[in-house]
Image (cartoon, rainbow over all chains, first blue to last red; front, side, top):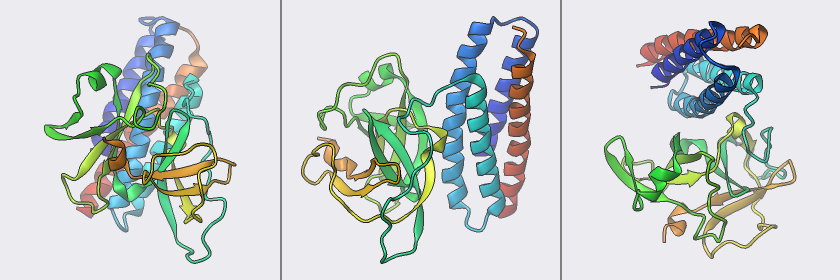
Length: 240
Length: 32
């Protein structure tokens, strides 16, 4: 899947550059279309990191995933596409647990300025979503012909509605941490930057500093090295 | 649209991606 998508995206970029070079495309429309491709490349870099984790011992796949991540960062910098997230470099747990020296790959994503984090093995994939798709969805998302629960947590958490005119993202994750196929939810989040995948030691659990969450909603909360916090949520609690 | 330096840089990224697509395909086939 990642190989095909990487090839398609590379070919689309070459077409776009060709059109711009031969004056078939105005500068402004090149910038707008390049920004769309930069977002696709960011999502692809996250999906390739997820895919790379599935191939145990596949160092070559991990190297390619890293190559895509670097391409995503380079391309975003070239076309001036800001990731829109409140953080730009991947932080880690500020106070690692002394009980374990293990480190884990995490995915960070933002919902109304709050930084939530999930362990990468629980994430199936990330994709883009239009507000219009969300309005007609009725609590379900059609994932390639399979209906899975769609979680839009903003209302339940008392957060402001998603800004119109900005694309949303879907994070497809396992709903009960068992990893079984067909046990997934599609979580509506704001943008996911290319730097969203990072590695961190296991942090020491602490309390959220900036706001209160509904009872039982947070599984865990760690202080982050950039002064913020990482929130691990039980997304089933945000469904009702 | 004549910002050639930017276009060249974008083209290099696109060509890197096509190279990686081939590498990923080979690597995935090797591991399957």
